[in-house]
Length: 465
Image 1 (spheres, one colour):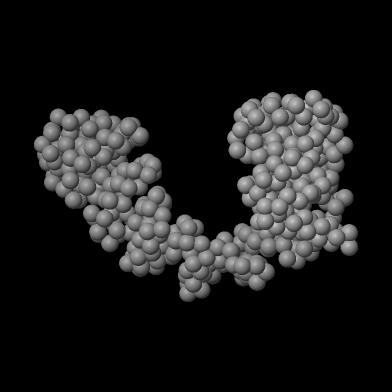
Image 2 (spheres, helix red, strand yellow; image 1 turned 90 degrees about the horizontal axis):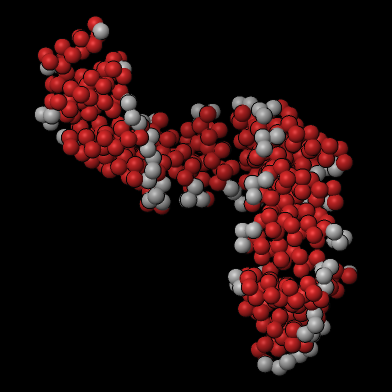
């Protein structure tokens, strides 16, 4: 009843304040009412109304430290850090032991990327703070900004000592354990934690993920089962359990767990995608592709969904459908390098060489500098008779992959084809010196060059060397 009355009072204060703004009448509110009104507007992002409330609040309560601290928050939000600093210094003189003053000072230092300074200020606040958990959490976050994960971990563990149900601190502590590759240590900590808090679904969930990371799948499965026992609506536990069951090749059971998540809440693209993969492994192609379709309907921006559909039709040698869906994907995200590489590969299989070349060129432009991408484009340019473009492409390839036989053989063949014999002999000798076994590249890509007597003589000389 007390909470209900508190909420009613808040709603009444908000109604009176908004009514006052509409009528331009000035009403009186006590400082606590103003604090609640300001907090409400800041939480829902209505900063203009929060500023009005602060201005009116300070006109009625000019000595209120809390209202002035809200003013500091507004200054920080608006990046008016100098004004925030000046006001905080005045407040610090009035209340040198006010914890919130230190927190706001640290916030400003953090925004200036002075994380060491922020930590120092927060550590000062620890000396007189009664509620240390929040301060340890803030210090931990500053250590994370500095990539000091061991220090951050210790801070989050101190938060948990002060408040065992601070799940945000628990997540952050486990994140630090993982980043430090301390899976075993994380498991030890979580087991101790669960001895004191055995029905904590969050801890069981995190324990299962740690076992999964070290491939202890049976133990991971047990941990996720305990998470579900603790909270049978915990979607994350069902998803993780499904992943473990996939690893154990218990695909039907994995599907059941993924489907439970669909029943508990709105469908997630992750669950739909995993169900599709499971059906595909079970050889149930129709159900597999149906779920891939549902995945992209649920989240058209999820590239894994489009890639799954494309791979599905690729594997089934239905290249026209694969091309149709990869084109749809590219229309949604024109900068996705994986889409463009698949587009190139499918067009190449369909012998649409101009489109394939365009795809590989776009793939390279988007930063995919893998050797097979460069070589595939070069081979298509050779087939198209674009010899100069192929040479330029391979010269660029050599910058990324120097002393590569596959590149040197192609350059040799191209230079011979374009009547640049000196360059041809130079690259052919390089190629043979790097790997004689790749000589078939000349035969496959440049059959007329391969039959030349002079080329045959060089080859015999290298074989006998």
